[in-house]
Amino acid sequence: PLPGEGGAVSPADLPLILPHLQRASAALCGCGLGTGESQAAFLRTLLPQLTTPTVLDADGLNLLARHPDLLQQTKAPLVLTPHAVEFHRLSGLSVDAILADPLETASAFAVRHNVVVVLKGSITTVANPNGGVWQLDAPNSGMAKGGSGDVLAGLIAGMLAKGRQAIVLIPEIALTYQTVMRFYHRFGERVSFINSTLSAGEKYDQHLRAKKGEIDVIIGPRSALFTPFSNLGLVVIDE
Image 1 (cartoon, rainbow, N blue to C red):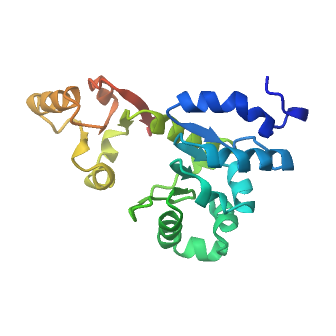
Image 2 (spheres, rainbow, N blue to C red):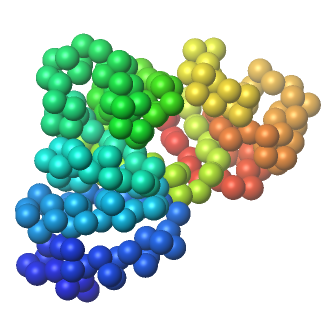
């Protein structure tokens, strides 16, 4: 157990935590952290010492909003995962301004502070510090549940830790040009698909590309599960 008092982390816990972070490929901070003075002091001490790529979520974002100067003191790659209200606290922009132009507001913040921003909402916007920006314009009310943001943060941290491959399972009827192109715009030639319109030879070619490591994302019905990925990290089921 950590030596922090009353169940809250504090700077006194860092000598135990930092050696583990130095061995880690990625970290996630903020879920259930709390926003008291002890936790604030912990984050103020931790971030300038971080070298591990880190996802900041939930209370980590709320604490960062109170100490925005920490963004300039942090050398580690950061991924911030705010919803509109959290992003309002971080950026100082009004919620209305954020919702009116999430592409511009997320991108400007990411470039200015050299971070990745995952601006969550019915349409999620992802902006990187190089000016790249993407939107997932596929609202899903099933994600509007308590705890789904924690799951998302964990998935991002996991994929950050390892350059893994992914299988996206969707009903064949939904395997449209628009669906494939949405992934293609993000992953380029590293994305492919399998469905019943392909011949046996074409399916073999896709399996061969996956086996050679030429594909990172495969989209298709349940038969896509047989794709011979050697480094599979994520299966998304949207059926």
